[in-house]
Length: 592
Ligand code: NOJ
Image 1 (cartoon, protein in one colour):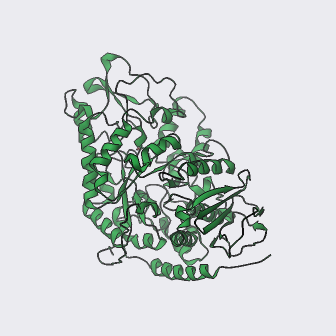
Image 2: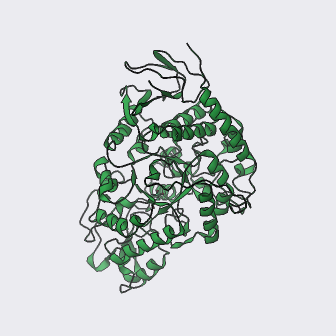
Image 3: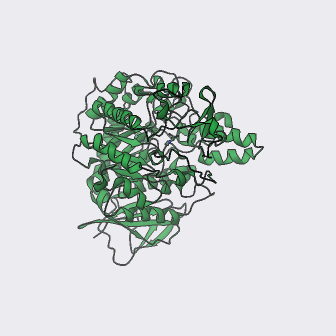
């Protein structure tokens, strides 16, 4: 048994530790990019988005600067040095546009304004400048499957059947009877048609009643969307994450779709008529004129469909992120590692030659990744969070880190419905209650899967409210902030945060981790996820022990270790023909 520590890692760590110390010094919230210059070149080469790591930032929960309990743009500006210090190349901001906040900004009332809670357009300009000065790109959410019912278009459309904006939305006149059933995800009755008295018509809303669906069959609406995109791209942003885009195309005759349920609506709504015509039009008229990235949420029901969105020759979007990975185990008490391996391997093989995909295990619609795929008990939280970050950062594709996952933040697991803020949780509860259903069972499920689990405020330090706000936070802070917080992790070389930094640095250093061919090993092993990455002569082996027990794993014939680990989430590593892996141990090893 041989213990080893990599000299490379030591050097890397010293470098990062000094960086971290520099960054952990309290940043003055008033210190903007303008007063504290930090220059780094912005990667301009075509296809830059393949080599970046995306940090998904939930503005409402990141940093409050004015004590109103809600995160804001000035708060983000005050933390830009932190973002730079962790090594991410791109930030995707959840929606920051004008919105009454029915669905935390996914209900937009003004596409060219900043939400009052978040600040002003001047703040936005400073934020973008501050990011670019630091070599960080900015990607915005584009939410155009629906608007808010408080958007001027909808206000006009609902007032009269002859409004010039009437056809920006879908209407079903009441004189035609009840519209063909459509399922709504957030509606308190899951009914996607809402009767609107002023014009005696129903309007369509796949999401909440305050999120009426936009009519993409109308060329005027499509032109409006293109103009909105140009408005932000001309400001200099670096791309869009396209929200619910797989749903935008609809057959306006609304043929019957019997039997729509929570389980099958997504399949039924996917890929409506002309979807790809719309995307090609957007590419031709807008995207082709800018060097930016686009990522489609949940594009396609399977890899074949996903390729239709992102194969370069089709000139539509750049990359897709699928739901199958995060969905593994969503309906069961536990998930099976073999399912996770199967899903990620299937998607990787499908993208081995063409197209590009995102790699993620969490986002603002999912529970915290460490609570779902790792083990958030105190003894295993840190190693399992490090393992999951190792996974994301050693797969082919563009890694997406959801804010807080670099610290190993966990689900909050609320006990009472009053603690929740997400309309999906609240409306679901109201529905179960109105049906006399099993409320304790509903709450138990929410505890594990509610979106509010991942939306709790970022844990900066051990002061009141985790340093997120001096006021009352809009959503409770996870009580584990006393130990799980950025300031504490800065000081600890073995923290989840510093491991995350090492993993990003490693990915930048070894292109094989971005581009190399992926090959799954030992597919049937229920505890170990192991794979090789190969590019020319560069070859790496990733071994992840997805369990809280020690495991032995025999090195497959033909593989020869080429030295000490490039990355390891424990101080020691025991090499040999059989690897002895500690609970949740994750190693990236060079191969000969
Ligand atoms: C997907 C977003 O990720 C989610 O947060 C939102 O509620 C829906 N789209 C509706 O916009």
